Length: 253
Length: 167
Image 1 (cartoon, each protein chain N blue to C red):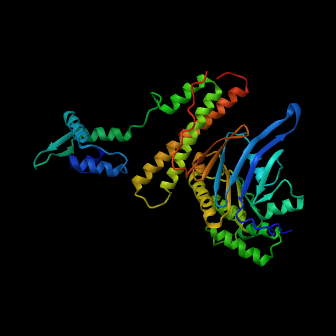
Image 2 (cartoon, helix red, strand yellow):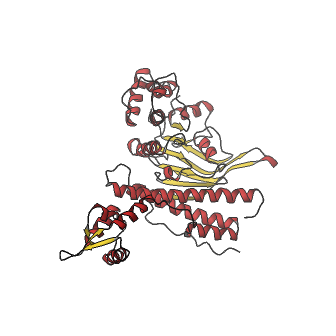
C-alpha cells in the first residue's frame, strides 16, 4: 500500500501531537504516562526531549512512531492521523515515513553496511537495484562511501551509528526518531553523530525527534522540550531573540 | 610569571601576551599588570632591567621556583564552591517542592538556551585559534555541568516527594 498517494502533504508538520493523553491500566493501578501533551515538529526541525526517567519520553516516542495509540488527543505524522489508520496502513507509515535510531545499534551483524541500509527499503517493496542506489545515497550523506561491503563489526562504534542513521534516513523519511543515539558512544564520537543528525534536516527536510538526557547533545536542537511527570513543563528555543522572563516566581507561602 | 618564563617582557607586552594566550576573554588593564609586577618584584620573584627607556621584567631564580610550584599545584575542593545557582536552589527547597521545581525549571531552560546559542556561535572544528576553542569548550562544559546538576536536583526533589517525605 502506498500511503504517499493522496492529497498533497508537503506543508504538513512532520509530527503533530495535540492534547495527547496516554494512560496505562485503569482504576487503582492506572498510570498516566502523558497528560495534555501538545507538540509540533516542523519539517527540517530538530527537537530534543529531555526529562528524568519515567517522565514519559519513551511513551512519547512510541506514540510518534505509531507503535501505540493515545488514550485521547490527536497524533499526526506527516499530516496523517495515525490512530485512525487501519493496521496495514499504519505499518506502511512506519516503514515509509518514519526512521529510527536507537542507543543499541540494531544493525544486522550478518549483513554488510550496504545491505543493512537496503533492508528496510526492500521490506517496503523497493526493487533491489533502486534500493541499492538509495542506500548508497543515504550512506554518502552520512559520510560513508567506502568499505560498504564490510560487516558492522568491522566499523568503529561511531561509524556503526552512522550506518544506523543512514538506514533511518534511506528512502526520504519525514521523521527520524532517535532514542539516546549517543548512549553507547564517547563524547567526541557522540558529538559527531549529533552534528550529523543536526545537519541532516537542512540537507533532507527530515525532522528529528531526539530523546537524550545529555544537555550537551540537546544543545544542538532547534528546540528543547522538558517533560516531567508526563507533562511538558518548559521549552527552550535556540532562535528566540531574547530570553523572555516569565511571570516572576512569587514568594511562596 | 609563565609569560616571563618564555622571555623577559615589558609591561604592555605582558598585557597583550596574556590576553592573546587566554583567547581574548580575560582583558587586563595596564594598572593591574604593573601592580602585580610591583608585588612580584617586592617578593623577589621578578627583577627589573632598567637599561632602556622602559622597565623590562624578568624572572629571578626564586620566581622560576615559584612558577614550577604553581604548575604543579592542583585545584583543591576545600572550601566548597559558593555559586549563586546552588544558593538559589538550596534556598528554594525551603519553600516547598513546587517552588523548588519551578526554580530548577526556570534556571534549566535559561541555561539550555544559552548552551544552544553557544553551540551555534562556536561550531566544533571551525578552525578557530586553539586558545579560543578551548575557552569556548570550557564555557560549554561548565554550563553542561550546571545543567546536569539541575537534572539531579529535579530527580531528587521528585523522588523525595514521591516517597512522601519532606524536602
